[in-house]
Structures are given as C-alpha cells and as structure tokens.
Image 1: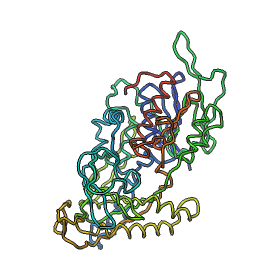
Image 2 (image 1 turned 45 degrees about the vertical axis):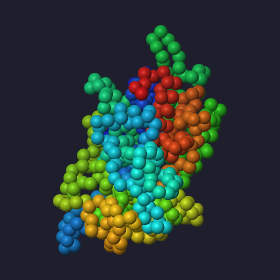
Image 3 (image 1 turned 60 degrees about the vertical axis):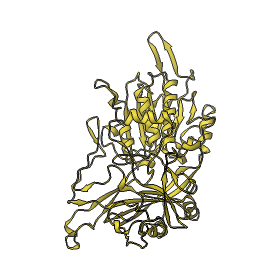
Image 4 (image 1 turned 45 degrees about the horizontal axis):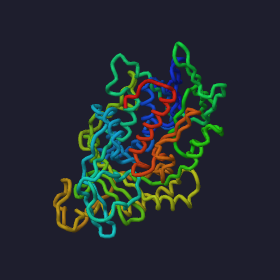
Length: 497
C-alpha cells in the first residue's frame, strides 16, 4: 500500500528541465551507492522504494517489549514499553577491494556512520560443542553475510576486520541520501537526491524516439531527451527520466522492463538471478550473557542454525536506557527521527540468529506461498531456539581451559563445565525470502548488468561473482560500477572516484 508524502524526501519528483534525471528503483545499499555517484556527477536522482525507509537487507528491525523486565513486576504497569533494535539482515561486512575501501573512506569518513566491530569471532563446532576462535590476519568473508556455513575449514580461523553501520547497519544507507562530507557549503547537492518510500514501481515504459542515444550536440553543449517513464502500482506517473537503475528485490525486477531487443541482456541477467531464503531470529535478554565466550560465530555441523551474533556488542548499540536517539537530518527535514526517553538502567542485550539455507528452503518448500503463517513462524522459533539455547547456555566453550569471556559471569568461563539459565524476554522470527544470492549473473567480470542503448543498469550483490558475491562488498562494488557507467553514458561531470 502506498503512503502519502510525509516530508520533502517523499514529495513528488521534479528537477530542472535541463538536468539529467535518473530513477533508482530500490533503496538498498547498492542502489544508493549508484544514486550518490550519479548525484555527485551532477544528475538529479529520484529513489523509489516499497519499504518504509532505506536499507533493504541492511534494514534495522525495531521491536517493543511491553512489560519491562528491568523493573519490579509491581511497577511494570506504570512503565512505558521498551524498544529494542536488531540488525536482522546483514550482520557486518569485510572489504578486500581497494576501490570499495576508497569509496567507503571518502563517503563515510568523519561521519560516524561506519565503525569497526571489534569482538571475539570464530566458529562453533556443533559436534564437539566447542568455540574455535579465529587467529592471524587473512582478508576474507565476514560471518553473518550469507556465505555458506562451514566453509572456513578446521582449526583456527583467519582474522578479518568487520565493519558495521552506526547506530545500525541502515545508517550507511541513510548517510548515502545526504551530500558527501567533502561537499562545499555552496553546493546544491542537497537537492540532488529525492527519495520516496512506500512506493511500488510497477512499470517502466521506454519512450520511443528517432535518435537511439537521446543525446544531441549543439553550440550550447549537450542536451538530453528522456528515455523512461515510470508508473506506480496505482497507475501514477512517477516522472520522466534519462536513465534508470534497477536495484530492487530480484523477483520483481524483470517485469519492470519492456521486452525490447535493446534490453534483452539486462532482462536475461535479471531472470537468471537465484537466491536462497533464511530465517532470522531476534532475541533479547534482560541481562548480558557474560558467560558466552563469543560475539559472533558461524555454526558448523548444525542443520538448523548457521550464525549467532551478539548484536549489542557492535559499536553504538550498547545504549543506556534513557539515552536520546537523534535521527538523520536531511535538507532541514527530520528523516526516520524519533526521540525516546526511557527509565534509567541498561537496555536488554540483543542477539541475532540466522538459520541455514537448507533448513529454510526445506521448510518453505512445503509451505503455502505468500507470507509465513503464525504456526510456521512458531515452529521456526521453536526449532531455532532449540538449536541455539544449548550453545548460549554453555559456559566458556573451549576445552583448553582458556578464559575467553566478556565480563559478567566470569566465574563460569574457560574450561569450567556447566550451563547457565538463559531465557529471552523477546523472541521474534523474520523470513528473508530471497535476500541471499546464490551466484553472480553479470558476465565477463562485470559487476552490474548494463544496456548503453537503453541507458539502464541493474546492480546488486546478485551481479557479482567470486569472493565478494552475495555480500555487502559486492553490492557496493556493483552500485559503483552501475552509477559510473550511466554517468559516463550521459556525459555527466567528472567522477570523484
């Protein structure tokens, strides 16, 4: 259901007639990276997304705990509900591509939106019931990003630097809607990106014309003719555009484009996208699980659970109850901004658990299509909690007697055997139906799908093969390539990359 415009970000799209106007369908990190590059090079960009805000798989989930576990039961009725937040999709990411690293440093350096997650990571050997910490320095895939579980091999795991958005993974997507930190005060970049949420783009119509490129030269410079008109699911015209970037959910993308020869390669690539489902379980505990030896593990040898992460150990998450949260400011408007006032005390400790792809695929294969039923989600919650509880209840986790914990119940650490009582005060399950691509679809080492004649690019982690395929790094690299290809085709200003 489409929502009425609520701020300048949601206002109907308009831009100067002589400016290059670009539509980006999808406000995940790949689409927003492309949008930011195009805006930096002088285009006016309209971003459309069906969700309530930017993020996609990097969205942050908010849940309410109506009865506070942090107070005496006799006082609970007088306390407001408590809000907890989870990175229930992408958990973190690593970077091995120097071009991606340069873009991230330039775009987020000094903003506070990007930070390193310094925790204790490794693997959990389900058969032995043992935590295997990583060691050494070896760039590679970060756990929790959707890579097949158990691909690290045995023994000590290689060290990886993990990056997260602050105060949530979606902070990076929110920051991409703003001008880059280096933008001059006189620049009008603040008007370059206009985002509308709660809008489903149902159709993209190609505007026929006699000049295929739509670019003509004159003594006054380059002029452009629009190539695309977009329509919402309600039939509303969303505007005329010179170029199009598709970065939406893969199952909806092929139907957006008309069946034209000039778009055949892009349409074929989109039709080949395959992705696997996951279930994400969000857990909140009244007290920190100080006896648990790790902050994030890939689980090896368990059919149900593939990743367990202590969300509260990420930078910017461990807030005191009563702290005020300030939203992102854009063009004088408050975007996704909420002031919260809570009773003094510590907020609950939050954990995120991802299922294995095999478990989710098997369960969903026999379920009716559409949204999962309450009964199905209840079954998933029981199965996942049944697999996770013995791991979180176990003290320590290493057989060598080493104390590897994080404070709290330190007496139960290391080689000391036994279990702690662990019961969550919140347990919620979310289905990711197809957010984890299986393989890259862009050919010849490309990181995006591209039609120069149609001036349309498709980007996302699903385009990228190799080590970065299906990961946040791949999504960023794909958005970078798509944005630069379209900007070059439209002969926009010089790239800052």
